[in-house]
Image: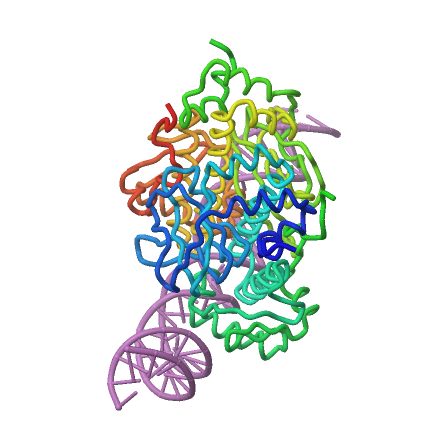
Length: 244
Length: 244
DNA sequence: CGAACGCTTGATGGCCATCAATCTCTGTGG
DNA sequence: CCACAGAGATTGATGGCCATCAAGCGTTCG
């Protein structure tokens, strides 16, 4: 049993493709330089060009865009096993910034190595493209969330999705998960004010649906919460391995 | 001069990579079956599995998701040269639906052919991945639009982006473009009610910023509009060929 | 021990949804 | 040829969701 088989990324990809020993090797070869970053200091600034991508192995990150008027929109959160900046490898400038929410550990991935892996290990390539497609599907669902759900359902839906993602890397369960986000993070992700997020969380708590407190999210009545939020996890496409 | 060199997709990709004759050939080989669809009838239903993707050669399409309560959120519009359903090739179920807004012509692309092309023509592959990354960047910008801009700026920003995209395939200019969208389409894309979209358009018109009328969008004072909307087209990454 | 950060709650108001009615335009069939 | 239906656009009235301003609390940390 190799350490890599327990890495969050390997764990996540295994939910889609059953990886062989040589594919675990190929995955390990992607890992070049291990790097640490402290909470709060941005990795890549919006507009800065950067040909490297990262795989997050520990900690939480958010990707966001700042508006000219200073307001911030968080596009997505990254948890262990997620890629960082895969898109900015191809576009000439990074179109958004990354902020570590906690201290993090990440592994640098060279664009060239990634393309080589695609050529030599098509099954692994499929798994990686699956993960990228899934990330995009999550951004789309986030967009629907902002466009067509009110604050209560939006918040509930978001916290349910986060839970489902964490389950995939072994960091969550049906009853809840540890969550280092502040109410300000939630506000910037959900397009709400922090004040209103606070009220929404109170209401969800008083209705026995979920608790967001002291760095923990705990689902009260999960079934009722899923029903309330209209959460249909199908877009996450995590119903067990597809390629045997 | 081959017909393919004038196709919207070739035209779009040429803005990123200067394509050679053999690359035009490879691009032509992707085009298998040409198909027509009439306005209003969906191509792929949400939840339906489908292993084929399309390249749109004529007409307009929108991709959207329907909520359990019947509300609709349009995720993106596709114009000639855009891919349809590239993501659902990898995920097991299509996570959204496609509605042709006008009668359209599209070319079917087999997933396998696409991967073959990646192996034989890396420059073309890079160009296609660039286009996909750019599409994703547009969804992100759309998300920011919904989360952090008021109705006026949101509408202005959206119509400016659409204009910039159309320029790339030769269907628009600095002064305006033809646009088959209804105010209902705009409402579903912008997360607003159709009534409010109407009011917003009136205000933009009365301020001399832009006219949306009779299937045409005409910019009044484009500079002021760009300033007003906070439109920074850098995320579109269309500043001329990158790979010579 | 003061400052910073995050959380909490109240008061006020504005943006935008909703309901409702009317108007134009186009296509269609009697 | 005209009546009619339907889609799209337009405008007014009302109200609710959520932003904003303001104040105060607890905890952590230098």
